[in-house]
Image 1 (cartoon, rainbow, N blue to C red):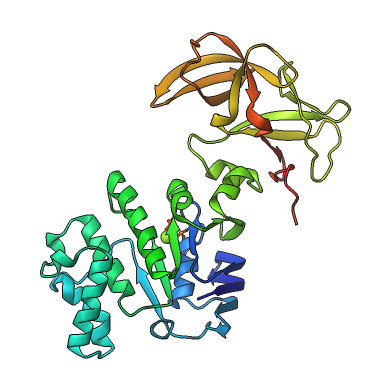
Image 2: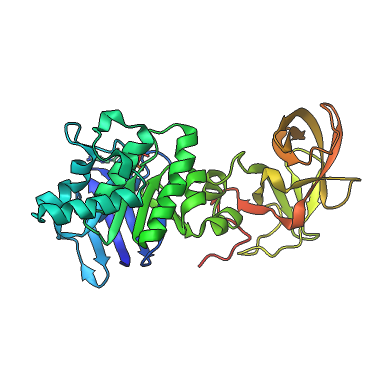
Length: 363
Ligand SMILES: Nc1ncnc2c1ncn2[C@@H]1O[C@H](COP(=O)(O)OP(=O)(O)OP(=O)(O)O)[C@@H](O)[C@H]1O
Ligand SMILES: [Mg+2]
């Protein structure tokens, strides 16, 4: 089912939890709502669920306006962070519960519940009670229960946050598999950018109730519309180095140093000299150059850490600290002076004041 949020806002007294949100979610997509704590992710999800009525704006499921449709009539399945399984019921009865409420004959309900248990791979656990299950197994029961009525929309609010790191990885792959197998439109709330990157068709990144960017994960990573998006996506985080623009020779001088970098990309909108910007470079986009060139910056290596297949350098350009992931063949030591160039012109320039990315065209 296709979803449309048209100018949706949600106010709780003075707090604006969601502020004029406009997005379309296509049939069969998995969209992550991503952003820091308190940015309005759960509120947005609860409006989709019908648990909150938007203060203003229109919410469409397909062609149907659903602002005033009650949750039980929305054909949705929902999974919360704490699963909310019924402790005294067996797994089978937990999964069957929504069908029982809908007065489906017991035999058919049992068949349907067993089919769902197979989908989420817990058919061998049907007679157990929730407390006899691991966290991941409980999560699977909750997903089976959410899907048993064959809803048109699956809503998940931080469904993996009670699981340990390894199980989270496994379960996010499972959720993606189940979602694709069923082909159900799914909204997944998380504050974990890596989780969002790994499972979404598209990510909606929010801040203070406001839309920041809505893009496929790789596009959000490669072309963040502003410094907030740039910093939110990626770990270790993007480096931000304050620079001043010189229009005459298209260079950027690093604040407080003699270091400057030639840059050949057009700015949107064009800027005049002396404009303050932030040069954004992801740790993996630095290269150590052989010699000093117009396209490199001199840096002093402070710390060298081997992490798996990469080496993480902490270095300083003047007073500014940066981190670079470089090849382990690079033999550098603390105290060395290196020339840092940028791989394939993979950098961003953010306006120091508005924080907009000056290398992407804003519509
Ligand atoms: N029922 C409520 N009454 C008043 N304020 C609320 C209510 N629910 C949420 N808020 C406020 O609205 C804002 C958004 O909350 P929301 O729960 O949507 O954030 P979130 O992005 O899900 O955060 P988290 O990652 O911590 O779960 C917050 O400032 C929160 O305090
Ligand atoms: Mg929340």
